[in-house]
Length: 500
Ligand code: ADP
Ligand code: MG
Image 1 (cartoon, protein in one colour):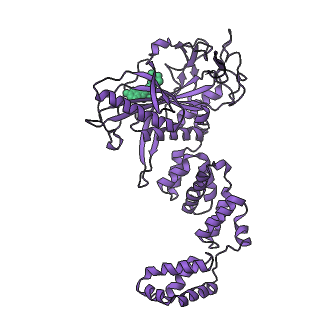
Image 2 (cartoon, helix red, strand yellow):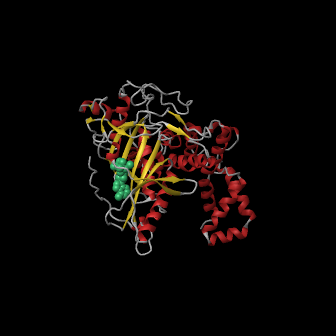
């Protein structure tokens, strides 16, 4: 298969340029993301894919490549790949086939990996990426092209730290289904690369086709980096293998781009090679010079029939697609949320679901503010996940109801939130039991207002000149009433008594 011609769809943007000695450089990045298919069983065997099991406990005779064993395709994995293709707005190839990629490695008992080189299950697609927010809270929307998505097997794992003179191998991962999602070289900055992987992970999680847990190896990326003069010809790329965190990817690209720029500015040339990122040193180093497809002697796997399906099969899967992040964001914006708020709320499906419960039958904007600023803020500060949130959506909704009913002010609501965070409980009951309800009884507020006016004649005189001084009186009344006076009632009374 000849490599597809590279088409540049992007206009150079100065904000992305890397400074060089004589002229700026532009980054060109393409990502090959390996995403483990969410499936109980492996791609061609019935063994479990469970994470964290004892070494070599999830290995069937097929996974161990015993002679005479035959692979049998797991249809669930095929559906998952088609579903992912649809979620990436991609072409579904109704006919695809598996090839053998031959190489020797101790963690690859077959001596080849079953993959799809010539006829992948999914063709071209596109991912909408929101980059930002910038300092003004604005997002830039960028389209990153997907070249293809294919199914392949994972290899096992060599362990070099178990014995002083020997290496061990764990075949639990051997044969686990992966989707390799290859982007076009459309990415032009580190921020775009991070936003792309984040968005891809979010889509996969919404679809339920990959859990996206990078720390467990469920998602990792080969990062292709080159530099060029802005808008010029594509440069020679280096591929950084197996990057397993978004933060490391950013560091790896930054280091690699600077390394290439230094070489080019000194008149050298870039050798196309495969490199490794060392997170401790923050460097990439050469692993091997670029291998070519012919080195692997790819050929169609004779043990597996091509995959063929009809439109009806694809349409059944399309009908099962859930609402995806972009659709959800558009719906939230149509309900009055800003792009910023909507983007934060849809990034993680669980957060979106939580928000929708809070907003159900309530003010969308108020619900968004409380979910983002208070709940997510507190979770972030505590280093906790939403799944372990001490405040449920029903409790947060209850707090908002109390604000809306003028039972408590926004300020007291923060105290109620904190009490629930620490002790749990029903918001209305907490407010009642602890006497936190707002004083709306104008008689009581008026008494406090009169007392403060009487005690501060000079301030009253100043406030008549300068109405902004009223704020000071509001503060005093609030203090005197333990923050429970209805702010509107306080303002109205003060204006009537001091104002012009
Ligand atoms: P290989 O398996 O040889 O790495 P693939 O086609 O699977 O080839 O992946 C190539 C990846 O490299 C794609 O993500 C593509 O977008 C990216 N790429 C191609 N040319 C460049 C380039 N000049 N600079 C950066 N990335 C590139
Ligand atoms: Mg590659």
